[in-house]
Amino acid sequence: MTTRPAATQPRPALASLALEVSDLGRAATWYADTFGLVPTRRTATECAFDVGGTEFVLRRPDSVPRGGLHTHFAFETPAREYPAWRARFPDAPEIDFGTFRSLYLEDDDGHAPEIGGTAPDGTGTGLVGVFEVVLEVANVDLASDCWSALGFSAVDRGDGRRRIRMRGPAGADRQFDVELWEPQLGLAGARGGVHVDLAFRVREPAAVAEHAYGDLPSVTVQEAPDGSVELYDPDGHHLVLLPDDESTDTAEEEP
Image (cartoon, rainbow, N blue to C red; front, side, top):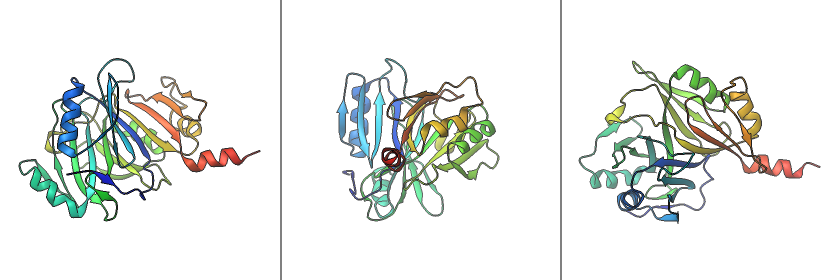
């Protein structure tokens, strides 16, 4: 199945997601053949794909930031196309969430990509975005406080499992979900990612980062000339906060 996101979709808040792989060529071939993704750039240490405006990066361990280890994340596909994906992977574990169904795969590096029939019609064909990333955290309450300050709101909490699903950032046209899991095996044996590398768009990145992590001396926030900020959160995840178009435009209009 060929992936062709609609050109008219709003830009997603999730700008990039990077995963660590042991064999870059093998991993790139698997994601291309399995999901119909087409590489957009390739270096000696990285291979990137465009998934509905999110750059999905496979990275060989070479320097920092590293990509996430054993990361569970979710691609979205239009609901009308989900049956075709199910037919393609008839033996994959499947979960019916009521409003949509998802199937779960596993790559050779232990990452657990999910395909969920969550996208509305008119968003393209194949895989049209990344709607969820799962992060492993030491303490879900402390981590959720930080993500709340980043503009994410709780939409679901675990019943008997120490996990929380949060959606954001606030005000984004195409939000995404972050699930925060204390160490555990989740649905289909999936795990939260360790030292995951992700970038997302917010208004006023420096102010947002200060609000979320300003009281934590262990977190160093580095601001770049373009207004983006980079940090490692208390759980070791590498976060890059990018200025969205509206905040950039506003700054340019000020005298």
